[in-house]
Length: 184
Image 1: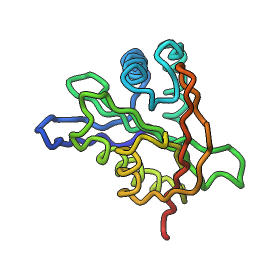
Image 2: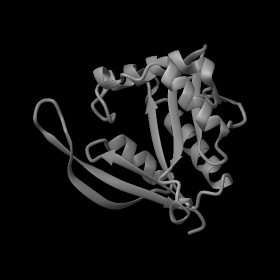
Image 3: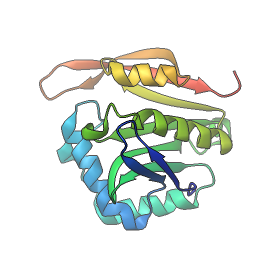
Image 4: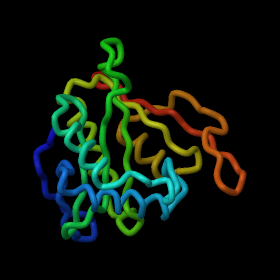
């Protein structure tokens, strides 16, 4: 589904537009994903693994736009994607339809300005409105800023997957599983 466009101002005065990315944003979204994957190892993939081309991204954006529950909240500053978040269904089976899975990425230059909180709160509000009863996510165990943000937005830790991520240098990172349940 497409969300309603919203303008916000960050702590430093930067003006941001939050809206759903659409097919015309595919190339810019691909650029953002590659950039954020190169800025930190906290992303699920390395930059060279961002192989999705603009055409595949356009197709995925069209599918999300037509879905009644799944959505994206993308942050634009001057036409550039600076943040991207979304909720997908865990599975498309009746027993799972109450659960959503959240992913988020923010350009390093926009970290620490309040954009993460604005985006997480927008995602949770929309997820609840769309009928999700809970939202889940996984986060690197040493991503302390993100964990603090998620907990301050109502997420609770539910478990740890040891050695969930193996980095290029051969070291491992655990993944903390988190959930927020609406109405509890």
